[in-house]
Image (tube, rainbow, N blue to C red; front, side, top):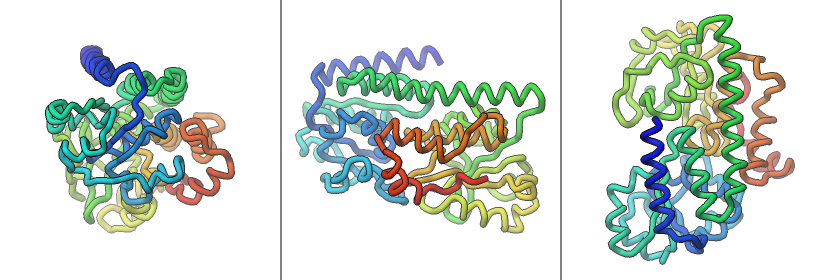
Amino acid sequence: MKTRISTLLAALFAALSVAGAQSPERVVMGGKAVTLVADAVYAFPSARRSVVAIGGTDQGLGVFLETVSPGFSGLPSFDRQAGVEVYASFRPDLVILKSSLKKSLGAGLATLGVKAAYLSLESPEDYYEELAYLGRIFGDPARAETLVGYYKGAVATAETVSRTASAKAGKPRVLLVQAAGGGFEVPPDAWMQTRMVELAGGEPVWKGSNPGSGWAKVGPEQIAAWDPDVLVVVAYKEGSAAAAARMSADPLYSGLVAAKSGRLVGFPQDFLSWDQPDTRWGLGLLWLSDLLYPGLNAGYSAEAEARRFFALFYGFDRPAFDAQILPRMSGTKK
């Protein structure tokens, strides 16, 4: 892990030197996972005025960043599969992309003289390092320190709850699935979803079953064989609570321990699901910790934590939260 982080840091500092010391004035973002990148960038108020084009950020439940920066939806947009010429056409000072796109777009952007920065945003450690990197790019390292502090606090809380509980009893066996195409899928071992279950003090029963680089389909027989204590359903284009309710009522799954005990639930959402490596992952981790070990995080409530998060990261006061976020929140009641 230390070697990986050192390599990542070297790449980040190299990209920063390419971008230059002055904050960019024309930023373009795109690619398949642009939503995750954009939410991190927009957590820096100093960055918002610089964005001149973006390759779409609606995962299926609405455009969140329009509530953060009115007029966002009016920015020029382009296909998430766009080539380097499209990026260059916006005359950017800096293109910010997921690191997975460096292989396909990096050389072409460099050839066209377009400066680029790449973010992994796949783990807590990535967030700590890459928020600091964004703070340097946009001239606000203090802001980065504040945001990183939020995540480190969430991780510390979850780990404390887990240690306290596991000292008294074994870890609950947890299955996290995505509802997709009428079936279910599990994430790879290295993804944030698996890591969150572990940080929250659960045993991810699917770990080791998906050596690939994306979600893998899993059938009812395998789910029945795992028969988890807790089953959490993720959905990105529909309500996760509804997807979980369908699964719980399905005769294929209604006999599961999790279904019979009422612990087959949907992962919380607003405009986006809280399970993925979006800025919301801290919210998801604390919710999952409370799901696995109810009441051990004294005073926790999903709504109160969401209010704190959206105020800290995006400047939502109580009326703005009540109008924009609260009506869209689901899956927070267990």
